Length: 323
Image 1 (cartoon, rainbow, N blue to C red):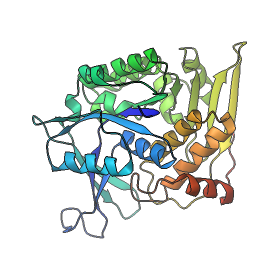
Image 2: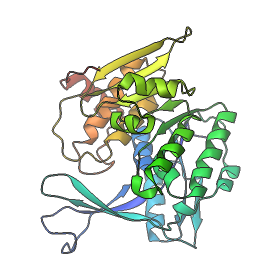
Image 3: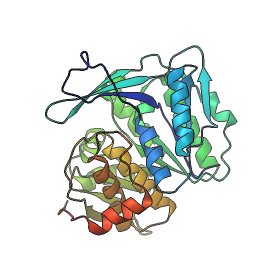
């Protein structure tokens, strides 16, 4: 079993990357997308093993995704195929100001029909970290239940569970339900990784330290808060119950596309946890991967190898950050 496992909805990503509108475009470069897919690619490129859990359609999109993952070294043994529903896809349109617009074709997708019994056939031997996100949890009641069951099984096998809330309000019946369901999942996890504005929304608190305390009081072991483009902070408690914090600045880069930055950040944090890095180096690595990701128009193809990551950290100027 690989060191890391994640569960989500990988999609074929069609990119209209010309001055034409997507309706006028005659060629659409094809890449892969999906929050958890981006994390898996990031983990693999940093030299660690990773397995992906999902359901794909028995169609060309599903074949393309499995082939891509296999070629990237991602374990696909826990991917189910269904002839009852299609694989999801998305279209990314690069707007004149550089910000992308993403159009999804995923309603009723094969992944959204994943049920908790998919966990029954998973071999958890050797697993060290399970990573989940709020995107897959939001697709349907059955996908939320699948994540709950997967978290319980991972904990039963001694694995650490990391959780990026990745809020998608349009996928929930209401903001109140999104907050309730997200916080219920956070309470089951070991490491919670929201952006500051996300943490403020989910906790109802404004200050980063208060946001962290909200989740530490739930029993979360570490709260890692992304502070926008400026850096990140990690909060935990020592043996006396006192809050311990580490704040690390990010890097100076030219931003091309912010999509996937949080996923890149998560992959850096996960590999740092695998390597037992101290908090300051964990945040340094996570910040670096996120910064590298925003210099590429692709959701994941710009994610760095270990050598590229080490060179970037050694040679790129830092910003300033404080809480």
